[in-house]
Image (tube, rainbow, N blue to C red; front, side, top):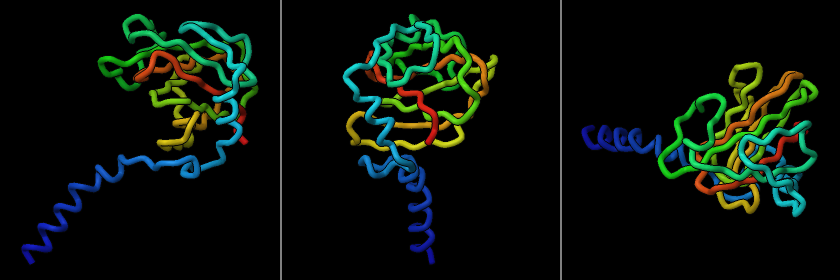
Length: 168
C-alpha cells in the first residue's frame, strides 16, 4: 500500500513536466500549417522595424526586427512579463481588417499579444511544435473590423517572421 502511494505521488509530481512538453515535428500541429509555413519561409518577406505601421494585412509573412524589451516601448504592457535577455517589438495594423477568424503564426518561439480596441484579444486555439523548419507556433484569433496592435515579447532572437492569414 505504501509503495503504490509513493508511485502515485511520484507520477502526479511528474505530470506537469509531461504536460509542458510540446510535440516534435511538422505533423504534430493541430491543423494544417502548409499555407502559414509557406508564407513564413517565402523569400519575399517584407522587413519591418519594431513600431512599424501596416496600412493593411500583409498577403505574406513579414519579418519583424526586435529590440530589448526596454527599447521596444510596447504600447501595452505584455500579459506575460518578458524574461531577461529576450527581445520584443510590435507592429500596428492601421486599417481595419475584415471581421473574422485569423491565424497568426510565428517562425520561432515568442509570446504574442493582440490588442484591439484597447483590450487583449484571447486566442481561440493554439498549436505549437518543435523541430518544424520555418514555423514554431500558430494561434487563431477572432478579430473585429478595427485596427489592432500585434506585440511580440520573450523572443530569443532579435527578429522573427509573422504571418497573419485568414483562417482556413
